[in-house]
Length: 97
Image (cartoon, rainbow, N blue to C red; front, side, top):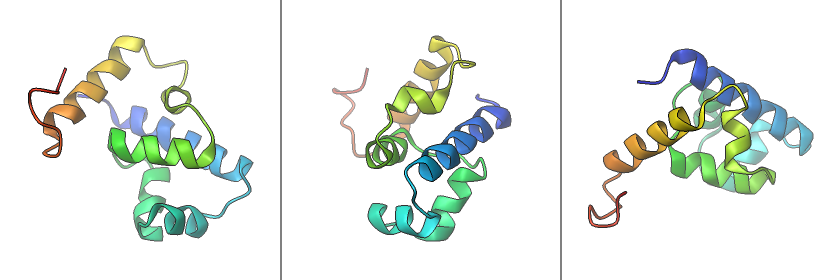
């Protein structure tokens, strides 16, 4: 299981990318069609799904890998993504890696 520090690092990068894009939390939340409170939790280090992170990354113009940072080993990133895919009820099991 990924550590709390891992998700806090993603949250810090979410904030950095949002600020670099010149957007407020409210603006990002509105464009993602989520509540401002939900987006704020992401920046605070709460867990974010791979799907939601991909949506934020696209909105903020960053590759999804950037949010995982250089401190994350590629195997750790892959582990998180695979675990999230396994739990996603919208992805048929035949498609899962």
